[in-house]
Image 1 (tube, rainbow, N blue to C red):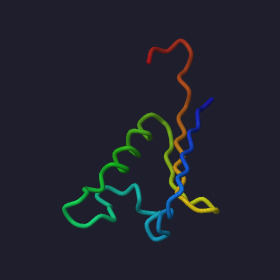
Image 2 (cartoon, one colour; image 1 turned 120 degrees about the vertical axis):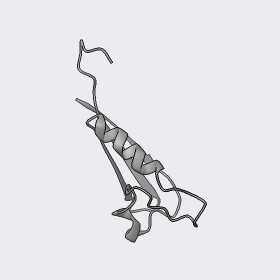
Image 3 (cartoon, rainbow, N blue to C red; image 1 turned 30 degrees about the horizontal axis):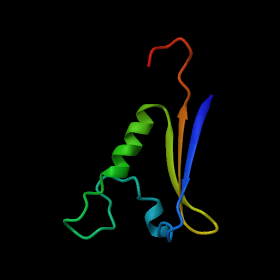
Length: 79
């Protein structure tokens, strides 16, 4: 009844103090003038409007993990 897409990178992961704020509007770890902090917030909003869920976490073996969950389209309904 849903599709789940998980992306796992091999970077340092997300700083623990940033995990709870990563989808907040205007939150960024970039220096002033180098990022607005809106990309993940906008993405989160789009996913929520489609009755889905977007989450970020750190993988136990390292790296960040983003999981996107969306409901499947209902059969017979135009998309």
